[in-house]
Length: 218
Image (cartoon, rainbow, N blue to C red; front, side, top):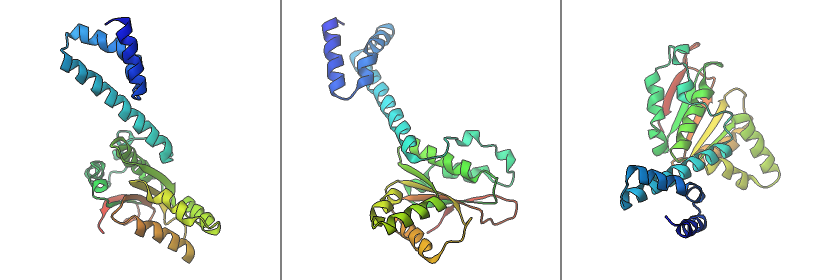
């Protein structure tokens, strides 16, 4: 490939918003030469690589704006630590079928059993799959909504919790809500109905020493 053609392709790639192609053009052509790729195979290689780069960039951007406290996955979770938790139920949630259905998931159990870890892992998986995600504790959400309500900007602040495909609400039930606070939470829950999923964690358990994971039926 002549230098003139290479320069023209790099310029066009930059204009099309494909900076990776502009930077990796020489690498692509070398791979094509070594594998003796035909025109269509070469085009498939370039487009596949560009799509992978764009997906990874979108994933990293999604994680950055999600406010997740960490980015641990289910591979990092030690299921032997909670022998009463059925891994199959968590893995069912990890298929994200509940997100596709705009249903909700509840992770219930006493403190220290890894509820937040699993909630975050599900959120990371959702982000990887292309869904928008936002993480908040219930206390933080209530405090932010109360501040916005007092400032006359409640509707705008509600958008923070209504826009994401997946909203993670951590530590539900740790503090008793006042009537006005409960109303604010109800607004979020009701306005997300059939529009997006919620993953919540709560210390309200069905057993004193067990952790329970389920998809909420609405």
